[in-house]
Length: 281
Image (cartoon, rainbow, N blue to C red; front, side, top):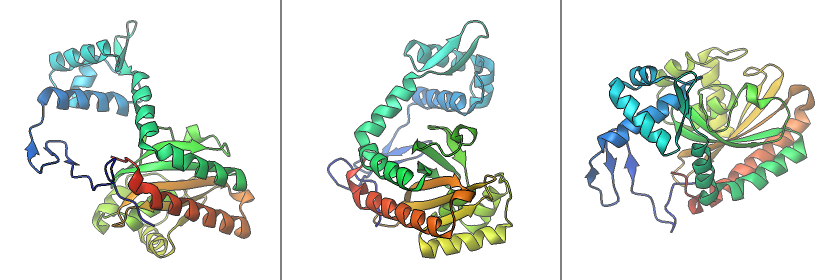
């Protein structure tokens, strides 16, 4: 049932990116362009902030000289990637980024495959369904969601990374990711749950999820909310995506939860089988 990142013609991708260097298709190390790296840091800084920032705040957070940060901000503003508020003299990421992001999702083919599967599960079981991309051992990026079981904006926002390991998706990350136990424990200590289990119990849940192929959280992450998460894996069993269903616990008895779990695993299996056709980089 697995899925791996391949290029548009089905060949394994040869590109491996890091923050300081890049291995390009021919295997040679590419030289990073300093101005582009700095601009990326500015955008990440603005994206991570809960409020607009002025140039000095951006410079401090991005570890740049104020003049450099200011020039980058003005350039990004001129190109439409950053908005500027004259009254407060602050900057924020503009909605043009959203246009680009939706274009990437559309061309990847992921939404064409995932959205119908998510909508079917949502309609059949009265839940919200979320699709997240695994960014690394400590973060998930919500790509899309359907349904309206509860006010999801209180917990998650499309396009914003969420910390892990938390809830059912965090259990899946622990079960199918490659973090060591000490790394997991350090990450686990930093995230908040409504009723956070002891780390030993969390590890037990991860072991169970690895055997069953799903994780269930009955109100421990969010009060009164049951979460069901399933992995989308590559052919080499690399964790690429996570599908999560969320519903009111009082609506999901044992029988309903079993049916929902089977539906989620079926959807994840379909995505895994098709992932080689997608561009998930």
